[in-house]
Structures are given as structure tokens and as C-alpha cells.
Length: 284
Ligand SMILES: Nc1ncnc2c1ncn2[C@@H]1O[C@H](COP(=O)(O)OP(=O)(O)O)[C@@H](O)[C@H]1O
Ligand SMILES: [Mg+2]
Image 1: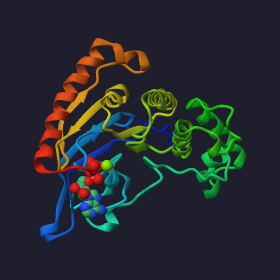
Image 2: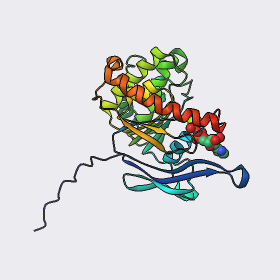
Image 3: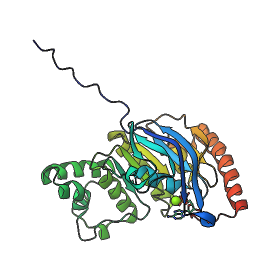
């Protein structure tokens, strides 16, 4: 008699990222730019990890390496123990397990909101259209956008479009969501709606979030940890754990602990901004 099959163990660390001694430089000789230098960072699966640092310090370079958009000069990046980026083009490979939300994300203007959200899985033929629609509606509800499924992108506000992009990013069940200053252009009130919508969708669809921002309030409000990068080249200068329990809502920003963490973060970021200014870095 054969032994009964064991049920597979649930994997609690889905989406764990290990950034291991990563160096990335661009160009050669005198024009060489060292963007990331001996950067190591472990991000547990399901964590919201916020990255702040001066413009041009190398944050986007690091995010693009995690996304597998380019290789690195040395070191390695692992996702759930598997190498996703290393030196040499073949070592850098984008995959459906990671999805990037850019600052200027684009929706198809001629498709309805729901068709935009379900575009990926329907095109790949991985699910039926009705299954995709059901999931798309649920994700739109998670970001607070029920009832606009049949509208077109031109008919909704820019803040709503940004929320649609988050729903679209999550429809394929990625392990990791990579966000590069997605709310930079939004006003404070719209941003705060974005933050609550992002947290709501995160609480229902746990993913690892790697989020670059210049906005310290955004960093402390959303993050389990805030990683402060040195001025270029990028490397964690200090990692600040945000010991304010999740779930969070907008009321936490007035708490004393929130203000204390903001202050601590601000001092460190300012030091690096001044260092970048002295080094002559302006805009990245
Ligand atoms: N493709 C590239 N080729 C050459 N230099 C680049 C390239 N991308 C970025 N850089 C340089 O690398 C440094 C870090 O850039 P980036 O990662 O975009 O910084 P950040 O996102 O922190 O503003 C900057 O000096 C930038 O000019
Ligand atoms: Mg950048």
C-alpha cells in the first residue's frame, strides 16, 4: 500500500525578495555612473516596503532590476529563493509574478474600465471572459470603484484612473507589486483616498509591495518599513520599522507615534538630500 499523499505546506513567504549585494553601474570609463552600490535588503513576503531617497540616488534603477527590466553589474536578486536578476542579460528576466505601476500609467481610452482591468488575462486566454469579469469587478470594488465598470477612462477622474491601474495590476495575482512614485502628481486629498484604496486592496489580496516615494507621510502611512536610501549610489542608509499596526486608516496620521516616526525619517532623508545637493545631483 502506498503512503497517502501529504497535503502541500502553505507557503507563508510568497513574494519574499532578497536583494543580495547588488551593484549597478551605467556606461563605461569617464561617463560611468554608479547607481546602486553593494545594496542588500531582505523583504519578507507580504510586506509593504517603502523606499525614500534623494532624486537621482538610484531608486528606480533598483526597482527596474527587481522587475527584471535590466541586468545588474554584480550581486543577485531572488524572489522566493529563485534568482530573477543577476549580471548578464539572460539573468534579468521579467515575469508575471511581478507587476510594475508607473507614474504615468496608461489605460486604453477606447476600452471600458472593466475591459481595461481584464485585458491581460483575457488576451493570454488563461481564464474565461466571465471569470475575468467577476474578478475584475471584485478588484474594482476593493479599490472603491464599483459602478463605473462600463465607463471609459476619459469619463473618470485621474485619481480614479490610478485606482483602476492598481486593480489591473492585481488581476493576474502577482506576488510583487512594484510602484514608482505612482501618486506624485496628485493633490493631497486625492492621495489620501489612493492610500486607503491601496491598503484596502492589499488587505484582501496580500502581495509584497515595493513602493518608491518622495512623500514621507505616504511612506510612513503605508509602510511596514521605510528604507531610507543614501544619496547616489543607492544603498539602505537606515531602515525604519513603522510600529503602527495594520489595518490603518487616515486617522493614524494625527497620532503621536506617527509624528515621531515622520520626524525621525525626515532628519535622515534631509541629511541625504543635502549630501546629494553638495555632490551636485539635481534631478533623477
Ligand atoms: N539608462 C541609463 N543610462 C545611464 N544612466 C542612467 C540610466 N538610468 C539612470 N541613470 C542614472 O543613474 C542614476 C540613478 O537614476 P535613477 O535610478 O533613475 O534614480 P532615482 O529613481 O532615485 O531618481 C542617475 O544619475 C541617472 O542619471
Ligand atoms: Mg526614479
